[in-house]
Image (tube, rainbow, N blue to C red; front, side, top):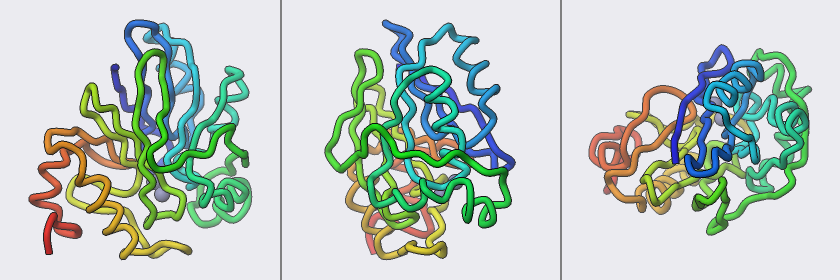
Length: 213
Ligand SMILES: [Zn+2]
Ligand SMILES: [Zn+2]
């Protein structure tokens, strides 16, 4: 599996293009905005979009999920159903919260839960439910390449904000310790914003959620 980050929105959100090199079937994770940039990424590598994946319901992560899915006639999978209220608000209150152009509200074709599997071509990713930043936040892990997509849960040297409505630092800490830190230390993770890091590095050096306390 190959991964490529396409930064979108003024927040430089890490939209991720991933594809199975054997079939050239691809998924786009967290298309927040900038559809044309994402389409160019697909075309540059000669990929067939198979599905759109969403980590959580914030506008900078899924503002154009429906636009992209409709354009290619593909399904949307994720987030967890607890973020349904955020997906409903993509064109209204979230526009004010984030100061971004309105997104397109949607109901995904499949809600995702802890332990679910998502496929891209012939490859599979594991799904983790990691609430705290938002209640329905999920993360993806591809064991074969040891790459995770952590959305706004865990960043290089930081963690997701928990001051938004329905945020919880207690829940976020639990999500990171029981799920993100259960991944192998050499797992590279792509966060929602900023540089890539590894699970091992964050366990040792993350100032907000150290491995033990
Ligand atoms: Zn977020
Ligand atoms: Zn974000």
